Length: 268
Image (cartoon, rainbow, N blue to C red):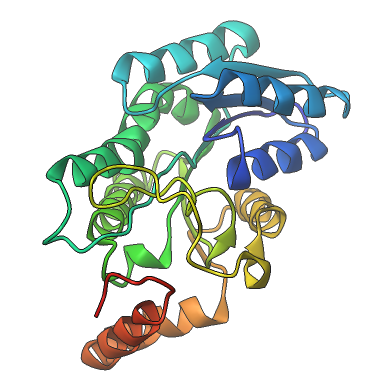
């Protein structure tokens, strides 16, 4: 990865920040994108201590012009793009019957359209470098999660988009990878949207028992280096995907029971 140029969205915290540091450890130039400019600059300072050049770009991936600016500033500074990690994302937790449609639209705008916009503007440069497009997805992109209809919809859409993009580019040398962590200790559950669009504020899960963002980042870096197609990062996730193809009704019942056990679950 030395001297490769890597764009990471959602790079101000969690998996995105961990990916930025992990790619920097491999000698890559890292472009940090997120809405929180103050947090981005803190990550940029951490990367500078590794002796690696980076660029921080304040960017809302749900805004097309921001995504175009991100790519233009990257190419202006580094002249190329080798890897795009579409990591920016938001979650939600509410029954579809109870939630405002604005919540689902906001989740789709960030998780799905953010991936589409960034990939669209970066693609000419990635084709030139025979680089990598990465989508940080979830088991929610394989198994519909109750009380997370918008989140599951966004991840199914992201994976369908990336699968089709991969097939379109079978002969161009473009690498497309979908990475599916398990539940990861990060800020995503604290910022998850409730039925009315307000932030959940507190995670309903024991974060101490989850994968760390650093573990996820290492797997993503290795996946890019080996040009893997898909990474499902937990045994539970692999089992859910496998059984979901053979015994979907059984998996639905297991998922329902698991999600219903969350503290303050909206599922009764």
